Length: 565
Image (cartoon, rainbow, N blue to C red; front, side):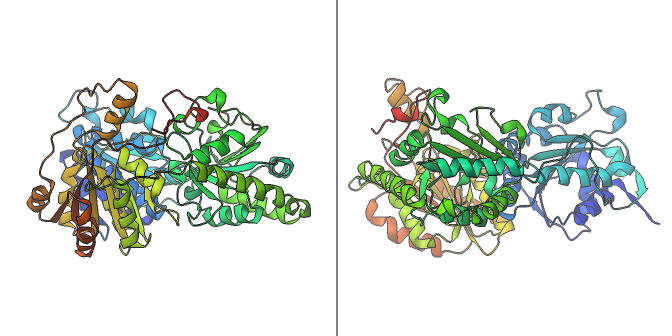
């Protein structure tokens, strides 16, 4: 059998995993693999910064459900990926990062462009590998993809010394994987599932609380069937949006720091909280001691046992894959006639929540005369796309406005950085999404601060002519920082005002079309023209700096302490 170089084995192993696109940036220590890549059928997307590559891989993974792949060189090339790796780790996104490394004989010698990438990424990866022998490459890459995509998904690093890439060995595709100590639980315990159903049946005011795990499990259809079959209202985390259709009256919207009054009041009054693929993070719970204070039972379904009772003590834990657990729940519920007898009481509970929502709706008066309201921008986005699009955002006020107001109907249509809160995520994630779903319209919503974190990726969008519309909600401030300073720091605006470039001229410099909207009367016509323009387009929308995301729970406060102005 013909021998291949380690670099060729890397490429063959990626092909065996079904990899069709890689996001990367070449450099000295990874050049052997880049040379082998040139002869393969894998598409390579040349980014402008390695952090951009990681977020593109995240966007690709979130839309496709498959691990995104990153290829970078050693030293600064590798360390530039750390933010994206940490982001993927926090948001359970499967990703495999292949990094070049100095030759094995030079490791530890402070060689040119050397960094202990395995040591640096140990706290923010599911696992990482330093490949020391060419014969191990095929097995390690197989294991890397398995670890990244199974259980609770996450990022895996494979560090490839240059001499290992250049060494030769026969290529034998690895088939069987046996990892001692890593055996994710797929089936939920039947007795725990039965206990959960019994608790739901006894409750008067049950509430579903769902997170991003539903989408990673591909369990949106099972969730819909279960929620509608029971007639129990449902609230989603930032990462869970799209798991349940926004058009369904049972869907209450987002809970937590910027959740609506009706939703958060429901959490405060439920007697049975059913958490599905969510991790009870601080942006959801507020003050933990006062979270869901009337809940006699908290049920938690999650594939990650370390998430169970980590932040909030739960009464009925079910460890398992969500699709599997919900399927088993549906089977058990179908055999219980008594469940149907509770629907009348649950319908009354649902009506009560709808009444709370009417009492204090989101943004009753959002018009500001000639100024453009960000909520009108979001409404026009929905009008132009009819909701049939993928939206990627950065982090800040614009992110929360979209989360509150855009009606997501489908899973895998909402890309945002939840756990790490990474400014600079949106543009590259949106570009990555176009490679996973080339027929879908992709819209990026960013702020004047966030967009500048990875604005160089406009060059990538132009080079590959991706059909992406980038909307900047521009208030010449770090908007969310300004909002906090206004409300909690006595209006002392410490270094949150920002000078910004002429975004339209910048778009033109990159070779893409740019538009600017300053007055409300120009919004509809300009956005229509921008969305009708093929290829990458940037839309700079000036909004009032005073515009705030409301309601909000003050930092350290309880859900019952929401601020409305």
